[in-house]
Length: 206
Image (tube, rainbow, N blue to C red; front, side, top):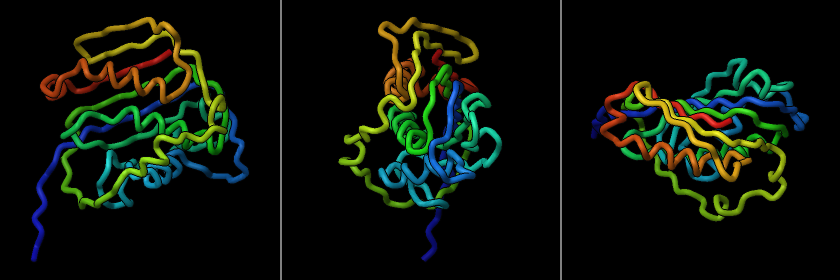
């Protein structure tokens, strides 16, 4: 029996990180998309390649800004995702998964972090897969990841194209998971109706 699939709306999400870094893993030709999606699948946040399930689907761009080589944060590290438009962008999980992925192979200091959301920008007919989050792995962050990738962020900003807002962060935040919590709160200022009316939402941290 044929299974009819329907078009569903998705947000495209792009994360960009800047700073100073060095790769500590002996393996070469590492790409952030591969590491991130592998970690996400272990956590139950992402379905196998070619299907959609969980919280997002990773884009495999394989370009100079996704390669973990040399001082990759000086060049600017970029990661692209697609998230279902039927629920809020899961930024807390995204940033925590990204922190864990990076600290497995590198260390460094962050100076700028940004996330760009293009609402309802993609329509797809995905093959769905059933995935279940691994709660134990999610709530038990690796102790050796602490301090290996941090910054000192004192400012946050929101740009919707028609409105720009900025905040001073007191106290400052230092890690990607902390940024994820604040970013999640900032994005709630854009209602589902707002997201249907605007082309892009940018949240930045410095």
